[in-house]
Amino acid sequence: MVTIAPSILSADFGRLAEEVQAVTAAGADWIHVDVMDGHFVPPITIGPLVVAAIRRATQLPLDVHLMIEHPQEQLAEFVRAGASGITVHVEAPTDLPALLAAVRDTGVRSGLALNPSTPLDRVRPFVERIDLLLVMSVHPGWGGQPFVEGSLEKLGAAARLRRETGTRFLIEVDGGIKTHNAAPAAAAGADVLVAGSAIFESPDYAATIRALRGV
Ligand code: DX5
Ligand code: ZN
Image (cartoon, rainbow, N blue to C red; front, side, top):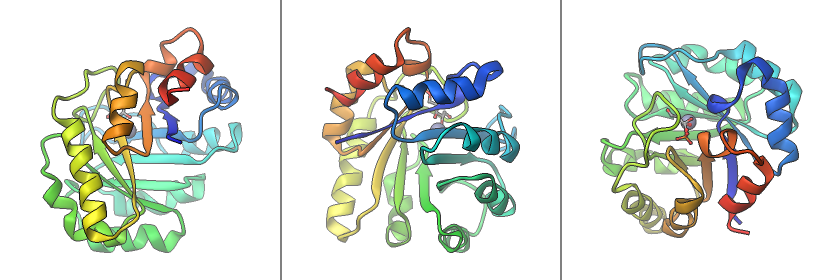
């Protein structure tokens, strides 16, 4: 069964703990946390203090997606704050093998993300060292954008890459996931569906999560 990870980027930040508790009660599997630094992407969102607050509001795994230029320097803080998995971008100007090793050393799930414009080949050298591959299906930075054409094909190619290399990473899709494209994304290869606006802008979180799951 597919894992549903609501992205709190689209939650009401004035009532963040309540929102996290609401999606937890509504059947979410993970909480997806979008960290942006104003450099890797234009917006600035949240830091470890807020991750720690979310950690206190739920028992669910916290799936922390770092859209930041210097993840190496921030990694330990996010793990201390309660991250269960840390995903870094293949496009980040950093020593990626060292970074992925550092993530694994902390004991949390190590994830690697790629933007819609980045070819899948860029992640190939790292597939042995990751627990999760995050396929971005919007250009990173904002919630509520339309699903980028071609993302289903990329998910299929990611699933083939996993088969060919005999690796076991989870495939996560992030961006523009709604009830109408959740099943095609899962069929194409996604194990984890991130959904922000689809859930938080819906009147009934539980019904939306059930619809995304296809049950
Ligand atoms: C975008 C973020 C996504 C975003 C998804 O940079 O990584 O997690 O919140 O939002 P929706 O589901 O609204 O596209
Ligand atoms: Zn994200």
